[in-house]
Length: 460
Image (cartoon, rainbow, N blue to C red; front, side, top):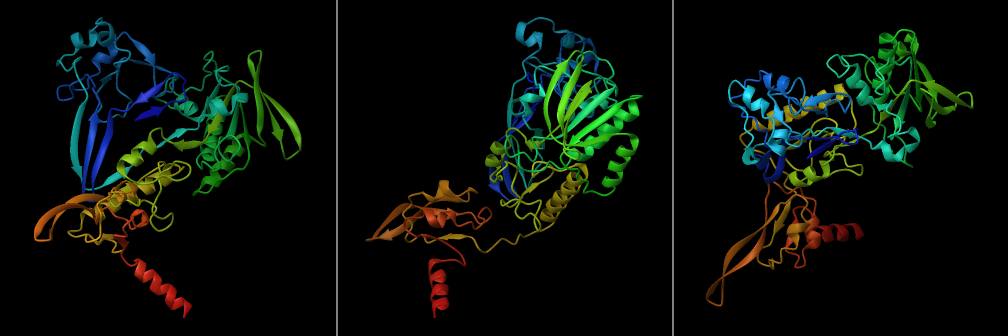
């Protein structure tokens, strides 16, 4: 899969991709494409010498284009294993057969420019989906905010990397355009969230709190600074969240209730034009930098991976859980669990809680010698099954297979094809029963005869 960056010319490549998933709970056969890294990890010690000597620099995906990285690099500081990979798109040796400094300098001979992708098939008992999220593509929907024209209009993720001690500016809050310290920073919340006209109808949950944190960081790190937050509502649902929001107010952050209609440049300043709905007037703020709290959306490729593994997504593209209250980390496919923002927008505490729940579900699954399956699944009456296989593509869980059986007819043994239901995969949705032309498939507990008998009993 390809993960999107909010920098227009950057895409971040993953180094392993799930190509195919077969099997069922306890027996998932997963085919994984391991991308060529051009570094032999069995030899590499992670010394980092190759990174220091590489002459080629390109925009860093992890820093969203705010910083640079080498062509041979570690994806991020805490990567596991903490060893480098080569970006084949920017490496001069791979593309032009020039340079090759990393191969010459490597003390253990770990560089391999002839590396290729590998397909590996492994068997797993359970699958945990944790594909995260991407940012809403505000660039096209909110052109009035000056995307592409004003480099000092950034997203919350850009600000997060900038204010991080290991980030491209060593934790200093600086304007991307000229590297100077901004004195007035405007934060705009709900960019793409709760906006059915141009964005998403749902609330992204985490934006209120990280905006309060960013406003607090501006006041803390920049002397005599102003942090102005345009908001629709302030939502602080977690433990001690309201107290943190009040702390941001006490630090001097100014909250203005209203939407921002336009951002334009005037000299070296960004003019933010919006509304203060509490006083019923338009306001204009001269800002040095603008930070957008953009909506959280499903990661690019999430629909494809959901289809590959074999479960559903909701109307917004997030992975669908079995039940929002009673089974929040399970999917309709047995043995597949959810963790984090792939299931819906959430902050770090909720993500950690859901990941812990998914891990416990997997441990509980593996602790049993036998599994109790749902008895309300489809069954096939082989005597009347015509073997048309219409039911097979209809099944959303891939639970129907075709098999050959032998029968005696007129003193002869004949072989014919019939449908077969995998009890480990079938979730009892009933789609196949509707598609079956010969009426050979029934849902246990809900056969045609049973339903008609219930109707007759009600009519008596």
